[in-house]
Amino acid sequence: MRTYAAAAAMAFVVALACVPLVAWLARRIGALSVPGQRDVHTKPIPRLGGVAITIATLSPILALFVIDSGVARWVREDWGLSAGLILGGLGLCGIGALDDTRPVRARYKLLAQILASLFAYQMGFRIDALTIPFLGSIDLGLLSLPLTLAWIIGVTNAVNLIDGLDGLAAGVVFFAATANFSVALVNDSVFVALIMACVSGALLGFLPYNFNPARIFMGDSGSYFLGFTLACSSLAGASQKATTTVALLVPILALGLPIFDTLVSMARRKLEGRSMFAPDRGHIHHRLVDKGLSHRKVVLILYTVSLILAVCAIVVSLGRNEQTGLALLLATGLMLGLVTFARSFSLSHLKETQAHELLCDLGQGVRESLLRLPVELHKAGHQGDVWRELESLARKLDVLSISLSLVDPNRDGFSWIASEAEGATLHRDEVRARLEVRAEGVHYGILELCWRDAAEKVNLQTEVLLQLVADQIGYVLARLEARRGALFEAAAALDPQVVEA
Image: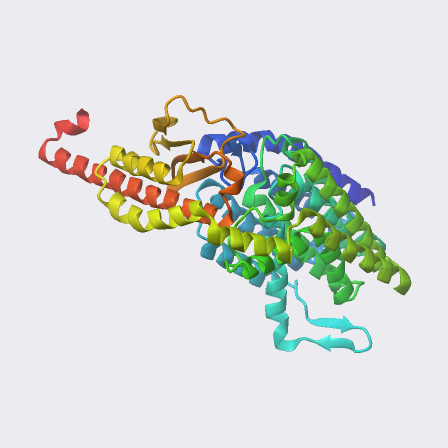
C-alpha cells in the first residue's frame, strides 16, 4: 500500500510542476484552443495538458525499475505489460499532441489508435474469453483481436468526446480510476492498482489548472492517453483475479457517463439523418449548459453522477448477486434520468429539430449561398474580394453583424480585420456563430456572425453549413497566399533586389 501511495504522491507533484511548463510551451508553439461554435471558452487556451498528465503518470512506473520493492519486482518481471502500456500510451499522447498543435486528419488519428491497440494486444492486453452466466467461459478465438481493438479504441474515444467542459474529463476519469484502484486493491491486481494510483495522482495535480476557469486543457494528448490507459488496465485486471466479464464491467460502469453519452449521441445523429461521427453541441454537458445551468454547476452535477457510477462499479465487482443487481439498476436509471433531464435524446426533440431545419430560412439561405460562393470566391484576386462576398452573404442572412479576423500565418497577431455594420459591437453573449477559418492545417483566423433572435435561426444543420463557408474561405485564402508566394518568387528571379526589399 505504501508503494501505491508513494506512486500517487510522486505523480501529483510531477503534474503540479509540469503543467505550468507545458502551458508555456503550448503558447510558444501555438498549441492553443481557439474558441469555436461548439466551445464554451471565449479566449485561446493552451491545450497540451495531456503531455503533463502523461509524464506525471509514467514517472513513478519508470522509477520502479530502479527501486527495490515488491511492486517494483512485479513491474520488472512482467515487463511486457509495462512496455505495452508505456509505449502505446506515449504513441497516442504523441499523435494527440501533434493534433493539438497542428490538426491531424481523423483517418491518421484512427490509424494511430489501431496501431497502439495492436501493440497492446501483442504485449498481453487482450480479451481471450468471456464468462457468461449459465453458459460458463466462452473462448473467443478469432474474435479476440477485433473485440480487443474495439474495446481499446472505443474507450479511448469515449474519454475524448466527454472533454467538452473545464475539468469534466479529468474529473470523470479520476473517479473511474479511483473505482478501478479500489477493485484492483481488493483483488490483489498489482499492475492495475499501480497504474490507477499513478493516474489518480496525476489528475489531482492537473485539476487545479483545469477546473473552471481553466488555464490549460488536456487536449487530445491527454484524452487519448487516459482512455488508452483505462482500457488496457481493465484488460490487465482480467488476466489476474477477476473474470473478463467483471473486469470489463467495472470500467464500463465507472466510465458510464462518457460511454453512454457517446452511444446516445451516435444514435441521435443517425436519427437526425447525419453522420454518427459528426461533431455537434448535442452532448449531455452541452445540453445542460444550454438549459441555463452555469459551467461549474454542470461539471459538479456530472462529477456527482460519475461518483455514483464509480460506487456502483465497486459494488458490482465486490458485492453479492442482489447488491450487483441493485447497483446495475441504479446506474441504468441514473443515466436514463440524466439523458431525459438534459433532453440529449428524445423523439419529440428530434421531430422539432428536423421540422425546424426544414422550415429554417437561414439554413435555406446558407444552402443557396453555398451553391454560389465557390464560384464567386474562385474569382477572388485579393482579400477585399473575399470580404465583398461575405458582405453579400451577411445581407442575405440578415445578420446583425459579421466580422472576419485574419491572422498572418508567418507573423504573430492579427494582420487584417474587417467588420460589417458600422457601430455594431460583437458582445460575447451576442455571438451565435464563431467559426475557425483554416486550410491545410493552417489557422487563418475567425469568422463571427451575430443575429437578432439567433436562437430561433441557428440550428445544428446551419452550424455545419456555416462551417463549410468558413472552410471555403480558408481554401481561397490559402490559394491567394500561394499565388502571392509564386509572384514573389517570379519577381525575385527577374530582379534579386526584390528579396532585399
